[in-house]
Amino acid sequence: MRKPNQFVYRNDRYGFTLRFPTWWRNYCVVGARRQDRDSEYELHFRFKYKGKLYEDIFTILVYRMTREEWIKQGYAESPLSFIAEVDGRVFAYLTPEELPHAFYDNKTGDYDYKKYRAAIELLKRMVNQDVPRIVQSLRFFGHAVTMTSTPYLLSKVCSCRIHKRIKRK
Image: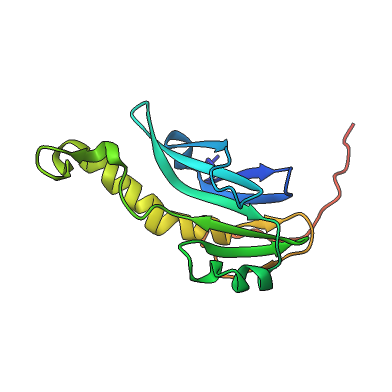
């Protein structure tokens, strides 16, 4: 039997799910902490490597406003990316613009690629390749106006038929 290549993160507070590659379990820690005073809620997915916790891989932020208000207030021109509008709330995400400061070598004035090469390559892959797919996998339990859909490639495609289970004696 094959192991699943994804796991589902479920947020009951705001009624959504996200699909992550299974291997992310070893490199990601999830926590809710509010840092932006304008946001209603923030969900931080932090990078963990060799037992040490670094900065965010990405953050999902929830704002109490409509998409029209989001655009009028200039958020469309910010580093934040719109994901969806649900029940008068805008969901957005943010990725880091730089590598974690812990990877920086003050002596050379550059990142320590010799010491952190594997961690840097992994983090770059997570941010640049995986996060866009993860964000596009976002599904709400109810109705939502979401970003344009892009196919998420899986190793196996299953039919959507629902079968009733028959109890066997």
